[in-house]
Image (cartoon, rainbow, N blue to C red; front, side, top):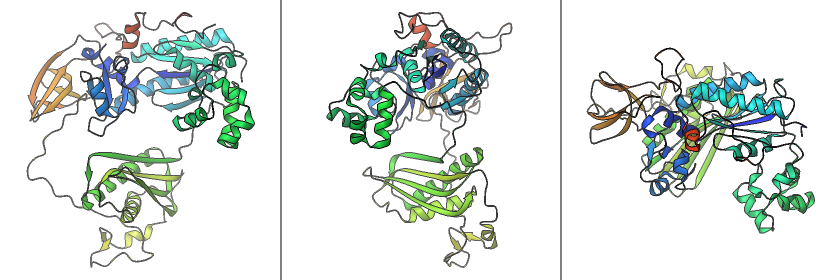
Length: 489
């Protein structure tokens, strides 16, 4: 534990939804829900306006629609969110060489390692400066927590939401944590929380008073001892700049259960291709291929195969995933498929499968129809999918960017019955007009996301006011005072 609150935790406020509100003026101050829009989709992020209706992350989208039927429901734009995240991470990197990203919108920063803070006042100044820089750079707000440990810095940022800064003075940890629910501690999820409740422990002070021996008896040596230390306010985990990836995977949930075995295999091969793309982008290879299948009855099966050496070859991964699929019964229907690669390395066994080039194989069989045979090299399984009789109808996802040859930039409000409705507006503009077109209108095309904040030059659009800041009635970038967040000294 540090003697000064020099560990910072940043959490962008309702990140996906806030980014959508900032880029779409007509949605500011209104409930916005981002996630999968199909019948099996889940909420990725809900704006603070939507949360007032009880909508929250990971909620089934059908339940969200019942709670907030008039909200705007949008498909995620991950490339857009990633570009904003990169801007934020660069700002964090300017504070310290020790930045530990947890997701696109969340990270720890060791201010002491960067030489920007060594006491309470310098830490507070660094946090306030960061929030102002994020607003100026992205047009969005973030909440900052400052404390002497990672656990408490994260708790502080939660208390600071939305659009605030909270600081926990070292030495006040136990007083602060005591009355809180056990669920506030890292590693205490619903199952562990319920187990502790049945043992009569519902608050952090209950855990501290129970003692380490009792928690070890209930939860095991490692978890029980760690939880007792955290209940006492002790957390010496360092901020780690680089976190090694343990696996790379992709998965899809289908709106309707898949029964056709050919379609299922085609989906597995498509997922394998996406997985290898991510694997190569991360600069890794892997030895173990993993297939995940969730069946119609919600039972989930996982199958894996370990190769002789690490690879990033699409053909190898795709064929291994196909072999794993052969071992799974899918006759009742499949609702989710996933393909992953684990046992990662930063090199490939280049000659491991060189022999696979010696024979031409289609669908796992040679041209004469014989099987690959025992000991044969992994092969590429090619599935031929029939083309539709006519041209496919263009799909316009709600929330995605478009550009019209006459009306300029806009975004899709909805589509169906051969029509697409577009609202033409840009970040920083007034709410725009709505127009409807045929889905195949030649003057309408997919567009690029526009920056939320443009360069400060004459005639440019100024930074928009973040929805969170506007909703609180404060000036953008102004740090909340002691009355707003009780953990300020």
